[in-house]
Length: 171
Image (cartoon, rainbow, N blue to C red; front, side):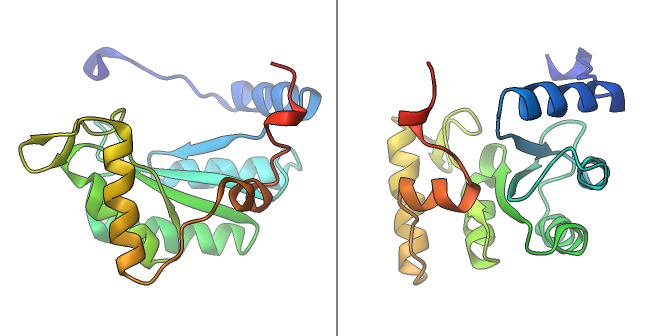
């Protein structure tokens, strides 16, 4: 589907979404950035006062039409996000397919957050299908902890992202 699909994000659309869903309804967004220009689009939204920190940037790599899954691209996107947002944001990495674990590991080493799961890769290792999301989470948790990093609890993650928690939503 990716070959023939355009995901429209005009600045008018972005304004409506962040003002209506964010401002009016209190939604906290995951700002998926598939390329460097998306970071600049987000910086514009922040400059307009429509997005307030702390906000969450999900850097996406290896998806057709977006930035390639090259570690130099990860370092560059992270460097530019730091220049644009300073300490006002949390960030995470999502890498498609075979790049999932290496990019998640690199994100942790750079001080970022990470995401794994079957939505991004069906595999847990070369040629080995993952039996579940939980198996991918267990694998990356083991890698991250073996490097001496701690994994945030759900409460710690909510605090860092300024989320209100499941007990305070109406669904």
